[in-house]
Length: 113
Image (cartoon, rainbow, N blue to C red; front, top):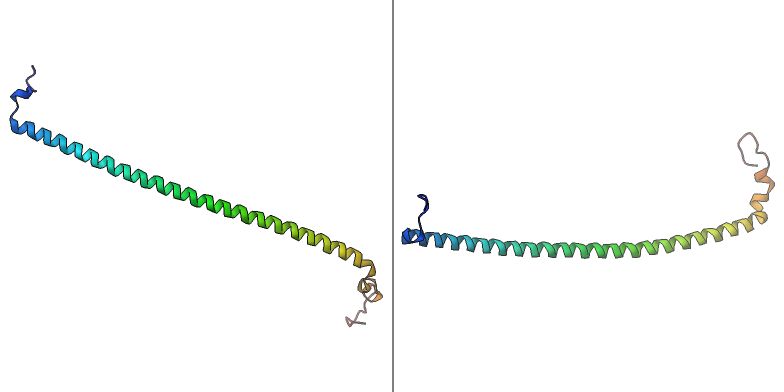
């Protein structure tokens, strides 16, 4: 037997109760800390889930907006094609483009003819 450690039977009753009380306090503190950590982890997971849900909603909204904008671009391109075709059909018949006024030389004094 070592000189530094005494067997349990030789300890004073007060020291034994103190150690048991200290172990119970440590155990109680450990349980409280574990519970606190468990609650914090639940809150963290809940916030993470909420953030993921918000991002998913934003993603769906942006996808819908993108789809609408693509449709608008297609409509505008079709309108541009129709207007370009109408202009091509109009050019040979246009009196402004075919008049001698615009095609002829202008007077040098800057006054209109």
